[in-house]
View (cartoon, rainbow, N blue to C red):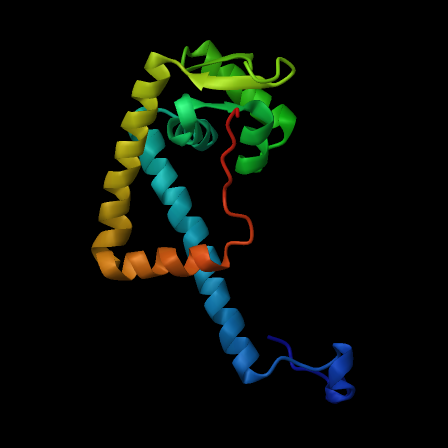
Length: 171
């Protein structure tokens, strides 16, 4: 990291101070955490794609629907929860529908809302992909960390998650 100019230490309250050694250590820990999780996630999703042929975005949609009530969710909720654009969600849903893995239809609660629902082949594909991911997690994460450390990590990350995934249903 570049050296801070001497004048940067003046006016600590105005954001012009330099990072301390504690700041550097904290930022380095953050870098290890976030970049390691990104690479690990990519590796895990590659494992799923290699075994099932499902691209990561397709797997994310199928997993979300697998865990949703009645294996269905509004398209807008799917987009918001997965962080996809509306167009991106539609594109993925179109591919999955063409493959016979999901179907779309109006919600019985509000016909303006379009629900995506797993088909029987979609349910099978989602379960196969989920089991593939579970096996990869056991091998790549739980094995090296141990179940207790993994559980602690999950609890810690869950405690600071600014946007836990809500699930809505009719009613």
